[in-house]
Image (cartoon, rainbow, N blue to C red; front, side, top):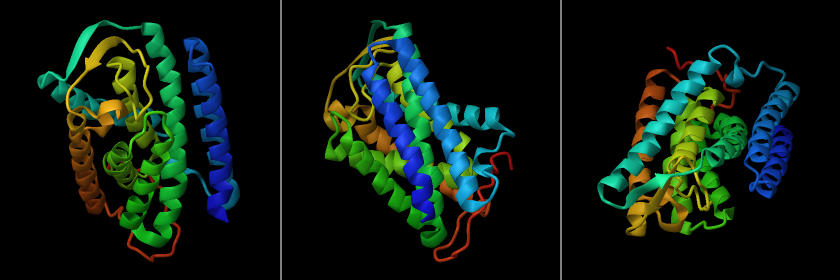
Length: 277
């Protein structure tokens, strides 16, 4: 089965890399190296399995325009989670206490890169793309969003509400981002910047993974529905609102570009990156 041929190898690389990164997380340099190596190996394995199982060029990882797609994705991700934290600060629910750790932020670059690449390859590169061939774009969006939320239930301080929030805000947004651009570079950039901005800059909890120290030392307080509680800002109503609104806009643009695949089409979808059009 084509899905399993692609899913199993990339999951093994990602999970092993994640376990090693967790084991060395007290050493920021090792965390950086392990995270970056995990990201690189995941991409290599994914590209190899797609070529082997589908006999095609891996256009969703096209070399042309990598910097632009990553860059635009990172700008979008930074702006989105930055807006969430800015709203928390406006309400007095997030306060900056002082400088954090530049070394800690460096380690988080590797950790978040590994996580972003692994999850985007699994959920958008493999699951979304292959499910879309049978269920259509919207069916695949819903299915992978639910799976994305369930995936985050395994995190240390995960909550049911947090998992639902992740499914709605990030699961739909990242699927819509892929539907719009047909580029994993764009979704990887968005995903990485969202996570790194939250943890690596503002030192907030990310998806129930706490004890991070980024460039700024901050304190979050207030109602869980506003702040996300132990799950972090991603469990906030603000994050749900911003993420869902972004998904709606991206899907509207995807419709205009003809990138929405109807259910039951039954043909393999070309993963052409059309961000610049």
